[in-house]
Image 1 (cartoon, helix red, strand yellow):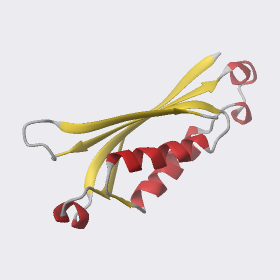
Image 2 (cartoon, rainbow, N blue to C red; image 1 turned 135 degrees about the vertical axis):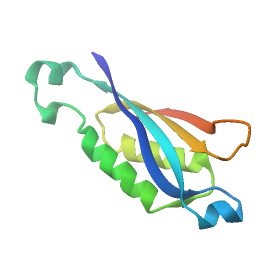
Image 3 (cartoon, rainbow, N blue to C red; image 1 turned 45 degrees about the horizontal axis):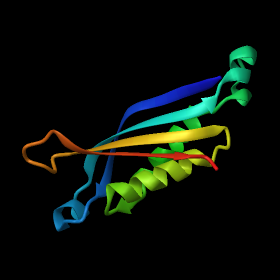
Image 4 (spheres, one colour; image 1 turned 180 degrees about the horizontal axis):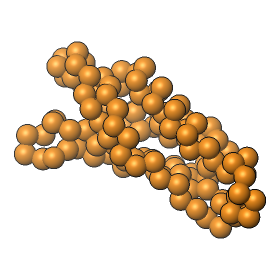
Length: 118
């Protein structure tokens, strides 16, 4: 049974961007992670060992972001996907990153990226 686990709207402050201003001042971004897993066994056993520990993935993503200085949304998104796919129970991951205050006539710039676990 394919199951989707969503970590929605994580708010994290980080250095992200190419301009001098963006390289000096941390900015708030919002991240949503969708993990596609096989939830069949966990739905029967009710045991954490039979599913993805999304708290561990959350903690690892926060650690990555707070200790990084990416220039591009694509690079950050790829790094988040790599963290998520370290867990072999994750069949596919989709990441959405919103970067605020960059485009004066838009709410935000958004990157959507996804990858299957191979």
